Image (cartoon, rainbow, N blue to C red; front, side):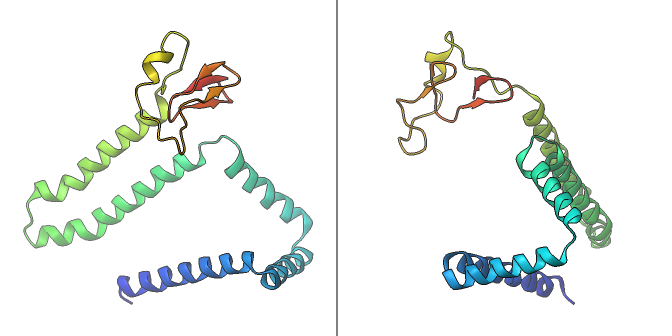
Length: 173
C-alpha cells in the first residue's frame, strides 16, 4: 500500500480512539463500561505481570530517567537512516545537487548539538544577587506567570518561567 494511505488509516484510528476515550471518560455509563472491561482484563492478566507493567510505567512517567532522551535520539537516528537508505539514492539518480542532499544531515547534527546542550547545561540558578535582573528577562503574562509570586522554599520572587527544582533544591530558570 502507499505510505499516504497507511498514514491516513493510522491517523484516523488514532483520532477515533482519542475521541472515544474522551467520550468514555465523560459519560457515566461508558465510564462504568470501561472500568468493567478493565476489571475483567485485570482478572485475566496475572497479578505479577500487572505489577511489572505498573512499576515500569511508574518508572517511565513519574521518576527522573533518561528513557525519553534516548528515545528521542534513537527516533531521530531511525528517521535519518531511513532517509539515507531510501531517499538519498533515489535523489542522486535524479541528479540533485549534493549540497541539497546533505542538508538534512547537517540539520540533524545541529539539532543534536543543541539537544545535547539543552540536556547537559545548567539553565541558571536564581539567587538574591541576581533576582532583580532575572525578574526582567521574561514578561509576566498574569495568566500562567503572575507577577507577585514567591518561592516559599527559597523566599525569592519567582521570575516568569522559573520553577523550584526538587532535585537540586534551588529556584531554576
